[in-house]
Amino acid sequence: MLALGIDPGTAICGYGVVEMKGGVLRPVFYGSILTDKDWKPEERLRRIHQDISDIVGHFHPDFMSIEKLYFNRNVNTAIPVAQARGVVLLAAAETNLPILEFTPMQIKKSVTGTGAAEKKQVIFMVQRLLGIREKIEPDDTADALAAAICGLNQARILQMQTKSGARIGEILEAQKNPLSKR
Image (cartoon, rainbow, N blue to C red; front, side, top):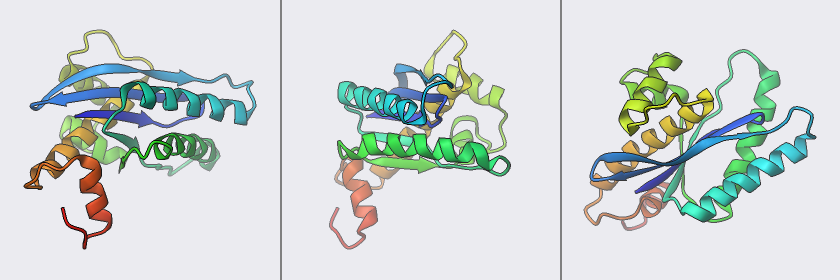
């Protein structure tokens, strides 16, 4: 199973493609899309959309795992992040890529065992789970990899719940429409 994790942002949009085979996680491709603060907002969004579309088109992940928006302080940063998240979701929608959404606490808990984990703990566990020796920078990349890991853990649970071993897209569709057959 292959997941694309995303930590949305306009200045920095983290991404991570992670594979799970037999419960073993392997990093496939990861990094961050960086946009210049001097670019027009539409140029930044176009770049994010194009790069995410390229990643989806190249790797053909089974689903996208993305962080839900959570802002308790600065509403000014919420709007650009929401815009970046929107173009990322559009890139997924254009290829009918299923989307799993998680809160930051859910992602932290999935990776570290606690939803109150600090950034350093998340980075450490992502490196350990994926066997990455070098420091993952920027933090947004580690957050995207953590989102992918969280999605893979959830997808594995969902697949175990089906007797037919249905693909994640089928499971998600069945959850939207509980009357449909699995």
